[in-house]
Amino acid sequence: MTPRRETTPARDYAEEYRRLRALVGSGRVAEAVDVATTIAYNAPTAQRRAQAWLFILQGQIDQRSIADIPTTLDQADSAVRRCRDYRLTGEYHALAAWYHHHHVKSLHFTAQHLVLASRALRSMNEASQAAVDAWYDLAVVMSNCGYQQQATEALDQCHMLADRIGVPRSSVEGVEIRVREALLAYYTGDPHACIGMLQREVRRVKPHLHDLDTREMEWIHYALGRLSLLGFGERWSVEHYLPSVTSSAEALDLRALARASRLIAQGRGPEAMRTLEEREIGDETIGVMEPEHLRSLALVATGDHAESILAAHQTTYALYKQINEFHTIYLDSAAALVDHDQLRRAAAGWADRANTDDLTGLPNRRKLDAFLAEVGGEGMIAVLDLDGFKAVNDTHGHQAGDAILQRVAALLSSVTRSGDLLARTGGDEFIIVLPGASEFDADAVSERIRVAVASENWEYSVPGTPVDVSIGWARLVPGGNPAQTLWAADQAMYQMKRSRKSYLTAVSSVPSAGSSR
Image 1 (cartoon, rainbow, N blue to C red):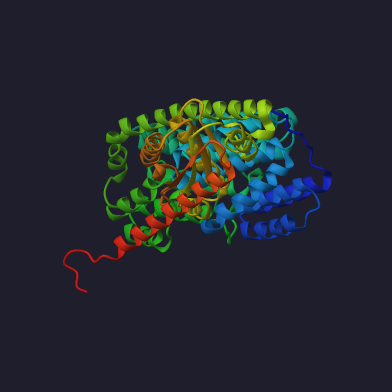
Image 2: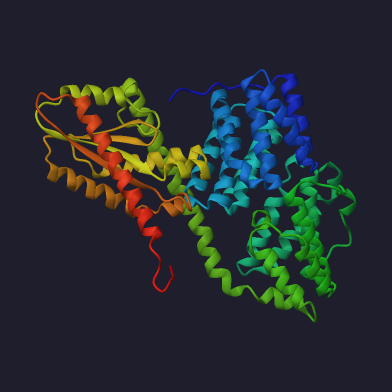
């Protein structure tokens, strides 16, 4: 694997970065997106354009502009690849993990992006405020996705780098991560630990509040409100530090939760309910349980609610302990898969780079043509095309599409015989050549492919976009024209695709039992 080239931001680039980071940190997210968009389309260097796309992506996440994110992910991926910069690569994968966790709902893709982000940042030599911020952003995303132990480790890396290069920790305190850790204790049956962690965190940062950015302050504001709900309110506030206007969806969610918590603590249940109903609080901010939990408490905001709150969650302890352990196990498993994939790619690249498809590691068209020219005697050749693949790209972005192509390549490899050739010739098209095979052998391979593809849980990887495969076969004959045989297989594949489409259309048009015409 060719080492990546390390870069150090030039003075104007560093100033541009600081300006954008300050806009995001102060809650002026919409303004940051506008500035970054101008840079993305006009900057003279690849690095500045890539950094701008990452700020656009971060801004869309902050504003919950979910429909725009898949396109921006593709743009950011392309821009970052051109830079070959570890820090930018790590930032990209961290933000991609957030999207795949919350909106693709794919544990596999989320974990894979987190592994790639962590490895990219561990490989960088850059020592700058931007590098510190990259570790911080990864820690926040890991916490947001539920990987609390790994988030703490990433935050430690962030703080060690900050200390080494003299960057104040106040810019990367990690309040959000520690508040999430406290809530995890609360919802896994240890509310007293939650109270202790929240108290320690707010008191730890109190002496240097003026050094914190607005996002950290929003989380402190929420933590103070949550402590008041638990019966351990502090006698100070940070409301005067918060801007009156913000375009951050997370900040608006936290303000609503903090206000509702205080109102419930004061026994003002109807006002708390109105606060929670006036804003649709996103699951992305603090999970699904906290808003629903506060709604339930607002309905019973009378009497000694603090003890009833503390006792209500013991039953969930075993479940959440299991989930937390599963996250760690799964992330380790994803790391092993990444290792295997990188090893396979490296081996394919060095062994036969000119004849290998970069994405899947399979033989490419050049290798296929050479193989067909050498095949003597009879055999069978198939053209395979994925059904539903365009919907994967359109719905989840090209990176998800690439991952699906890699998965399909692995499935096809598992069902072909030794001595057969499996190639990818471009897009979502694959070719299988079975030297010496008969139609009976081809039918057996087709059945194995159909079973393998049907058994894959595509809903788990790309929800709402099922993947299937159409296969067309043609016979290779001694002295025949391989190119003509390949064309015949291609036509057979399209005939199958048309037949299946016609069948599905006919079935969908049949009225259900009991319906009137």
